[in-house]
Image (cartoon, rainbow, N blue to C red):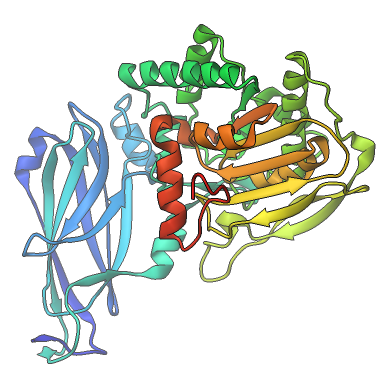
Length: 441
């Protein structure tokens, strides 16, 4: 196999733009060589549909990488005023060549499932070629990590390049299809129906995105939309009478007193989680339950520092941000079992000696911040890491209360509750664990 000699540099880069792209949209690409790396950057917007991503391919048509179109381009927003996606039309990625193949095809993907070639990039290597292992291109790790993080004002970090297109949701580019809203209506009605069948109180608390709680620290060019997918979801919930809470007002009202999210994490801190806990307890009590609520006097708040899931991605050095922890003055609830499955499929069971109601929580990564409070409120508390509503688990546990705790940005994907038990079982087995109920394991 012939490939480039290690230690040489990219000597010359040529970009040939495809004029046929003009039928689909506007855009430009640059190839910038820096030693042994090539940065591909540019911008793209669509005429009849929205440009949502860039795909890079080698001469054989094999995919090199997918690149999100989400970088701030105020110059493009000014030049194409009023066009959807212009303000965040930029893209950028850094590659390192692993072989002699020098041509890269740059395709733009649109939201109507059409892809159009924007340009081709050709590279010439200084020093010729020699026989070495490897071929094609690899994405620079540092570049890949940094591009998941958006730097806002005053040191606040935000998420980008996620599979749910959080920036698209918050700028109005991503909305629900009518069919999805109908599916959500059916899901919510099904959860209420199943809870009633099992004689359980059900409530849903949507964990707000950090962008919803702290929009004032977003970069100046990111203009939040007045309506987001969560508002459409809440309207559907109201139409079917589902007890859905969205504690944005409670979180926003607390900001002048204390932070409810760290600067370096997408999740709320324990202060923010406690506010969501209080909102849930108020809802459950309103539905007729007698709950022991952990009061403010029962918690000591501890200041700390955290990299978080955003600060840890910053390269070359991770960033730390302030956070707030919680220390309960009395711990009656204790972890009694853990199936040790990572993320989805994880099951934690807590118990306390004092009699009281039982609760099952179906939730995602925001949920562990709420568990220290919930385990003091319920005699038995079961947390299942999932966005679904698993009826089989509820039939095993027979809880008095069921809490669904989804994350705002994940609502754009409607869960399939009919497959919940089977998918959780398969996920746990695939990860080397199992569900803690013999009938479901």
